Length: 396
Image (cartoon, rainbow, N blue to C red):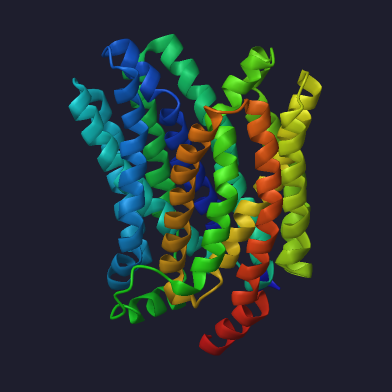
């Protein structure tokens, strides 16, 4: 049936828009601190603020996006978010001081927070319900590919042509996100329902909170990878191999994506989430005992499959925890709590890392992930996928 078709023109376009959105994000995430230190003489502490300010802006913006979308509609706010994101990207080249760069990072973060909140809700509207898990899984791949390509392009372009050319390429990627986003169509029925919720001024979707908390819990462990994998690899004599960690991570994720999404739809979330948690924990354990490149990359693949399966699964459950008209609120809730988990996790992990070895840290992360099984079980008890289906059928 055509209604069950996954790879529609609209779905492909929004995946492309999401890829360019996150390509620009990861591209600057790894390059701005070091580029500012080299060209502006920025201190390490201030360089770190360039990332912090961006994320704070995104986190602060997201809770209000649901209410704004309910008033204006998904497509108008989606296009506005892409315009803000693109204009902020163009402003980087005119920054001549640390203060101006921090200001632009804040504006850029607002655009990013707006865009990422709305995009997931639109994708959920586009996808056929029977293939939601598979579709959200493939959609997440666009982010994963950007996570690999962004840092590589950023470091290469900055190294070859300098910070100004690096900024203009960022604007180019953001323009591509805007143009592809402009072509995205929002289903008329869901847009109408979204506007019908305009009198509801809540900034959080309560139904999405349990699974959002679960995602944040597991994200804390993942923050140990983001923060210390390069340092850990150097300690183990694998500095040259560290840059390939996320490449192997992405390969592991891509190889399994066609299966995990279909299994989610056919057998339910629990069928893939519980094994993914176990594999995620095993990957952390294998990483903790790394002694060579082979074991290092094995851990990367296991973590890629495990965490790479968990994240889109949790987002899918959050988006489908409520009616289509309240999905922007659900997505805003999910990402707000998730980002908070990454932020808190980075602080906690950093505090712990100062007292134990990084190998020991990853071992504790493995144990921590296993404990998350109980939290996920609790979240599913709050809202089963069968209950979600019943709600959507009643509101259809």
